[in-house]
Each structure stands twice: as C-alpha cells, then as structure tokens.
Image (cartoon, rainbow, N blue to C red):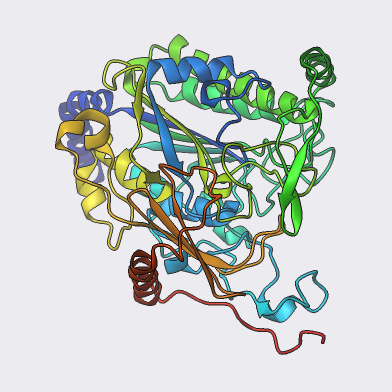
Amino acid sequence: MKVLRSIRLAWIFLFFSPILKAQNQSRPNVVFFLVDDLGWTDLSSFGSKFYETPNLDRLVQSGIKFTQAYTASPVCSPTRASLMTGKYPSKMYNTDWFGAPQPDEIQGHWTRNKPLKPAHYEPNLALEEITLAESFKSAGYKTFFAGKWHLGEEESHWPEHQGFDINKGGNSKGAPSTGSKYFSPYENPRLENGPDGEYLPERLAEETSKFIRENKDQPFFALFSFYSVHTPLMTTKTLEEKYLKKRAAMGLEDRFEPEHPNQNRTTQAHAIYAGMVEAMDQAVGRVLDEIEAQGLTEKTIIVFFSDNGGLSTAEGSPTSNLPLRAGKGWLYEGGIRVPMILSWKGTVPAGKEIHTPVISNDFLPTFLDLSGNRKTLESIPNLDGKSLKNWILAPETAQGRDALYWHYPHYGNQGGNPGSVIREGDWKLIYFYETQKVELYNLKDDIGERNNLAETQPELTEKMRTRLFDWLVSTKAAFPRPNEAQEK
C-alpha cells in the first residue's frame, strides 16, 4: 500500500508541477526595506542637501514617491506591529516600544514625577495575530527576516514564531547593544559573528542577497529591517571622515530651536549620522543589484519605509526633520511622517508621486492585493489598513481616504507627551492628556504646525475631537491615569 501511495503522490507531483511552477513564476516577490529612525528629509530625493543616498534616489526614479506616508506611532515597536498585522497598535495594546516601563514600574524611572502614569501596554506581538509573513507563507511564499525585530520581549515571539522561515538577527533588542554593537563581534543570538570589524548593515545586506539568490525560482517575501540609523551613532571611519570634510566645505553648524522641554535640531550636519545614512543606502544598493543580477526586477515589488521620524530632540539629536516639527517620540509631523518609496519595474509607473496620506497599517493589505493573494487578504478579520492598489495602479478609480488615527498614551524618551491624533483631509487635531489641551492644524497651509487654530475653528475642533474619542472608545484603547504617587 505504501508503494502504491508513493506512486500516486509522484504522479500527482509530476502532473501538477508545471502548473505550480507557472503559478509561482507569475506571483511577484516582495522585498521590504524598513529603516529605524530615518527622518522624512533624510534622503537626498526627499530634500537632504547633506546626506547622500544615490541608490534610494534611483529607486525613486524607477517607482513612486509617497510624500505623505505615516507610521502608526512616533516610536518603533507599535509601528512594526501595525506593519505586521494591518491593525492600529491601540487595538493590540502594543502602544509603546517594547521594554519601556509599565505603569507600576516608573518609581525609579525619569517619568516618576510626571502628572500621569502611562497606559499599560503589551510587550509582545500576540501569536494569535495573523502576520504579514504568515499570510505570505500560507500563500506558498518563502519568508525571510534580517535585522531588528523588537516585537517580542520573549523568545517565543521572535520572527521564526511569527511566520518567517529564516531569521538573521531578529530578537528582543531595539538596537545593537551587545558585543561591539554595529561592528562584529555582534554577540547577537540570531546572527553569527562575522570577521572582527565587519559592519552590520553590510552583513545584513549580504544575508538578504544570499536569500534572494537561493530562492530566485520561487516567490518570496524578504523583510530587511535595518538596525540603522538608530543609536548608538556608529559608522565607518571612511564615511565619518568624508562627512566631516563635507560639513566643513559647506560651512555647516549645529543649530537648534526650542521644543519644550527640549531643543530640536534645525540643521543636518552630523557627520557620523550622515555616514550611517549612506551606509544604509549602500546596503539597499547591494540588495537592489542582487535583484537585478538574478533577473528579478520585473518580478519584485520593492518598498522602502521608516518606522518613525528622525531623532531630533534627544539622545544626540543627530538629524533635523524641518520643515516638519519635532521628531521621534512626538505626535507632530516630524515624529510620524516618513519617506516611502514603492517600485515594481514594468508595472508601477516610474517617477510618479502620490500625495494621498497612507499609513503603516496599509502595507499588509497592499502587499497581498498587489501580489494576487486576494483570498488570503479576505480571510484576515478586522483590518484597519487599506489596500493602496488602486492609488498605485489606477488612481482614477481610487476612493477618498477616511480619517487616520494615532494613540500614544506614553511619555516619549525624546520629550513628547501622551496624546492622541486624528487627521481628516488637510486637518490634524492633537489631544494631549496631561493638559487636556487641543491643537488643530491645517497641514496644507502649515506643514510645520506653528499656527494652532483650535480657538478660531471651535466647531471643527469639537467635531474632530468627538470623532477621535469615539474611535478610541470603539477600539477599547488604554489611557494614561493620574499619578497619585507624584511627589509634591
């Protein structure tokens, strides 16, 4: 009987193999570059005059530049959770970076005397959530992860338990804080040490390129999730010296403006950070070259994104997000608006710009829709993200965008206060829990959020505030609470 069963299985395989192969060849691959802490104007194609990013500039020329792309949070873990699930972080209680103190742990923390205790958050992406990687895997894709994960304090929640076949470097850490950090030896539990002095972005680019080479004949999803350009600020000596000379030649100086209670950098002039940006760009270029070398350019959807805005008000304040206000850890535009590029040679129009607001929740439905995995997409319940397929391929049929929301009930390490946000059209309302203050901005006229119109637009302010809190209640969001232990 076993022999007959083996013969039948072999016959079925031989019969259906050409069909399966044809299906595999028709389904596009997805390569997603996710950078950590990269600001909206940190690419030369997005406005930087100091940083050099030629590889990403060519990606912009070959695809679509999104000018109003948003992260679901001003800090990393919540955005990453939204990207993986297509849901708002508040629904999953993944609202702060994993490792931040819980409300009952602030006694020894710098927030212990703040008026509010932060909301409780879950420090793991729940295994019950259907992730982007699991969705692709169920559709027959090979799945790969390289770099920063930061979606699980517990090892049982690391990438290999969330749908990734291969995990190169993903663990609980939010930064390369072990070993020699950005240089080998890394002492990373999911990445073998390389030769002493090997630079982490280069290593991760090679791991991603190797995966592409080895899986070129089947559909794959690769998430290259940089640890860069997150602190610690470290680059190669060659790149640091290059940008020290460029800084001097351009006559640049470190300048700041007040952003209570901190100072906000207003010039891009940090040589080490500039080196980190270029090294990141070189790593992207290494993978783009591999895609081209394997003849996969027309078969691969390529996306570039950052997990929150650039670090401008603390921890070295290495970059400026101007004309946007503030940066990482803040609910102003500098904390949540980021560069985004999508390229798919032969399918997506080259050199196009999309000005419609989009958000990190949109990636899961968009990738599954663009790659022809509509049935997989329709099987996932309670998604908040919207497929951008029509905006990308048939903008004349795309419907208007509904409101976008943010909920960050925590004090940011960078100076931001607990708050929630709604954006409708050009209007953006921020509610701050500590002061119960409302700020209203028209982003079309005031991208820098300098002119608060809440008092001059009372009806609109009340309408948007009501809609924001209706949404918060509907998602059963967790809120900050008074800090009774606050020292008087």
